[in-house]
Image (tube, rainbow, N blue to C red; front, side, top):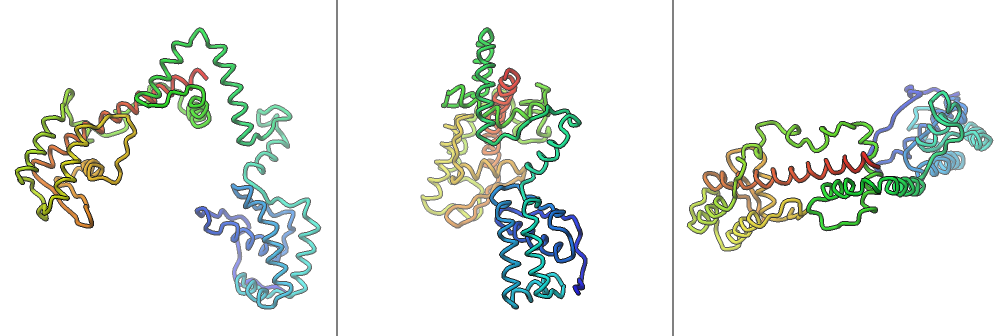
Length: 338
């Protein structure tokens, strides 16, 4: 006779990151429900990955088999579930599980919902005989669809080229079809959710008026601020704690100023490990000072030098966002035609 110390919910959603033991928890729950008298065929255990779904059955059998032959494994289950489990009960559950193999629902979420839709497709507005495509099939279908679309849109080739040019503004790669294929695969659903062209690339609407980059006047030229930053650095007039000691940190700041001057918006130039990147990021927080770390030492800047760096950073951020907006509008134009 089994007596549970606590009651488990019949239905439970397990949320956990990859590799954190979701499959292990699911198999435990499956065994618990069996021991509490549930028919294995009435238990539904679903996950995202086919690999994990394939491991369900083996893992369940393995745990039951170990508990049947090893008293310590059985005692571990008893402790975990708060039940008194006779060894005969374990053998009975193994037999029941094997007899129910062809009726078990241990699989992926998509396959489960597909089986539900297949049972009554017309009621859900689907054609009889629809199929569930894997990734390779989706790509092949999209490829055929795009080819037909381009053949039918030859008279609009100028519009397509213009949309592509905007979507890939300042990008070096110019392979048309492969890129449009990836665009369709990644963002076509988003177009269905948001068909309004005005919402695509509406950069100004995404940030508050107080955003630092919105404070930069049109026509701003950062050369004046960069020259002033360099002058303050060379004359050792920068307000910074602790003081700048040694040529290494001074050279790093000099290089950062040079990077501000040579920045090309939209070029996907990543300098995440540089002093330049730290200054650019710190400029967005709105504080009156800027902090960076260099060779394990923290520096806090303030005063005129910080104001100049903030203006240069705001200018770069604004130009980057503008290009992102142009690209996004170009993506919408392309998606609307495919």
